Amino acid sequence: MIKRPAQRVAVLIDTQNMYHSAKHLYDAKLNFPGIVRAATEDRQLVRATAYVAKSKTGEELSFFEALVGGGIELRVKEVLEFSSGVKKADWDVGMAIDAVKLADKVDAMILITGDGDFVPCVEYLQAKGVVVEVIAFGASTSSELKGACDLFIDISEEADQFLIRSSGRHKPHGQKQMDKDVIGSVINNDRKRPPKRK
Image (cartoon, rainbow, N blue to C red; front, side, top):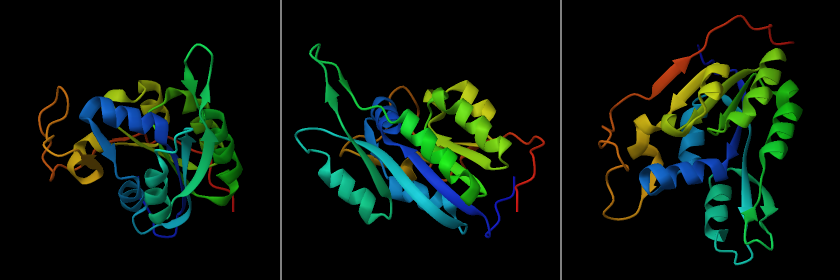
């Protein structure tokens, strides 16, 4: 798939999904502004939005500031705590609705998530003529999502570029250290798409 400089691109970030994947696989955090810059390249960025959850303690405020400082808009939802002790702040529906609203304003949509719940959203966007790219960790990404999108980029192959590791931690859990020069693993799903409306 060819990425053209004239392409209008939106980036939607499922921060909860990606945070937990990075923590589980690498015991690290992600450099979301760096991922957005690399993903959009020379294309025209229409919007970059991160869907985040805010706790009562406000411990994530410095993270929010880093996102905003990197040019990423925030959609914030309060974490709900149930009597059972379960905490929840699910953004899947909100993120999918925003993707649908943006469909007429972009040529390509980059979803930074590994969540298979977004497959119907991907299919809707493609039916509208939008090219859908997914960026996530291959090991924790739904196989259905990988198969549905037009382009899947496994950021595990670029871990050194996009991970913020705590000091002394160099190797991902259960995996060999990645070579920083390795080019990202890409699945290109070329198939006939309806042409983008003018």
